[in-house]
Amino acid sequence: MEMLVFNMNIIDKINNTTYKIKISNEYLSSIITFNPIKKELSFFDNNNLTTYLKCNEYQLRKILHNKRNDTYFIGFKLIFSLRDGKDVAAFNDRNKIVVLDKRYNKMDSYVLDNKKTPIYKIYTDASYFEHKTHGGYAFIIENLQGEYKLYTGEINKLGSSQAELTSAIEAVRILKNIEKIRIITDSQYVRKGLTEWLPCWKLNNYKTANGEDAKNKENWIQFDELTNNKYIEFQWVKGHSNHFENSLCDMYAKDAGKSKKYL
Image 1 (cartoon, rainbow, N blue to C red):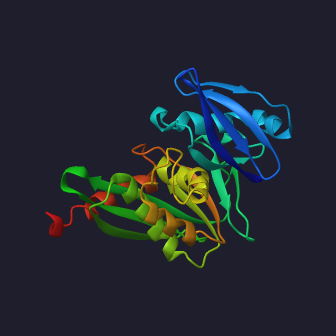
Image 2 (image 1 turned 45 degrees about the vertical axis):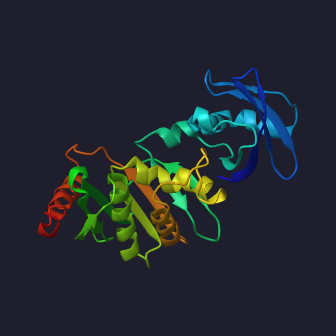
């Protein structure tokens, strides 16, 4: 699925609530207006870029809607990407497997049905005790023969999302020589971060659509580098739903987080 890159520039304000925005690539530009309060989007030009934006309106709206109202101002600039013909419904279906293929000096992303194929699997979870500012993580690696190996670790002075991310990073680090991996996690932060958010952060020097530093930047840089030249499948499972491996990781993560040296 081809990823195209565009520049966004807020160039004017209309009637105190609506903003005039220029979207461009190296060939064309298109003017839109957007009201962040009423979520009203209008297109004005009639060219190939405008047609493309209309065809991928859901993706464009997602960027505009997620941007906070107070970060709309004249002069704000953003580099963003759209995936041509992205099946938005499929990407939002939590029963689907999201694929990130970073092999062959390219990056491709698409979805699959949950089919059983021979692949190394990582089951990962983390537990974080906010009131004690520490926690633990656990992950299980299942090889192609169906054999399990459990790993655990302690974390200190991190948040719950960063703890989940740390668990996935450490697991992928162990499988650095394995090309194809499936990560099974109950964290949408891990699942969406690498496949949807990170490409735009990288285009903007790890800034978000609000112009702020992406949280856990160093962790995401590590994760991005570790997954280079790999084929990664992300499978989401609901936490605390009696999924065997997820429940096991949850139990061991909590146990690792109760290390006496932090109590």
